[in-house]
Every structure is written in structure tokens, then in C-alpha cells.
Image (cartoon, rainbow, N blue to C red; front, top):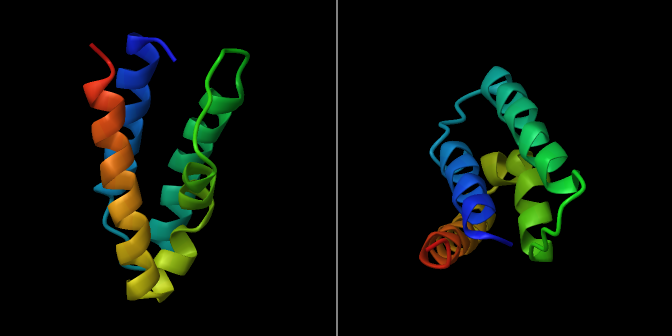
Length: 89
């Protein structure tokens, strides 16, 4: 993944990672925004991402319901975003 793609993906993920989900409406909006990231990742380009990212994008409802699982996935996404940003130079 080239630097520009890494920066863009990190930015999109940061936006989602800081999204506060308080209720079902917030969750619905989060999934709408996550779909944009999914669509971008699936577009024709050479983007390879870890399987955990696909889970993170698909499991906001599980994080909302299970604080322990949320903590585990939050650690992953924070580490992954830092790796994207560090490699974007």
C-alpha cells in the first residue's frame, strides 16, 4: 500500500475509532460510514489488510454489547492505525 493510501485509510479508521456509539441510531450511522471504508478497500487497488480489520469493521454491534471484546478490538485498531501512519512516510 502506498503512503497516500496508508494515510487515507488511517484517517478513515481514526474517524470510525473515535465515533461514540450510544444507541442503535449511532450504530446504524457507524455502519454506514464503515461501508464507505469497506467499499474503498474493495475498489481495484493493491490494498492488503489484516483479517482483524474486516472483523473490526463488521463487529461494532459486538463491541457495543461486550466491553471486553471492545477493549480487545480497540487495542488492535489503535496498533494498526499507528502502523499505517508510521509506514505512510
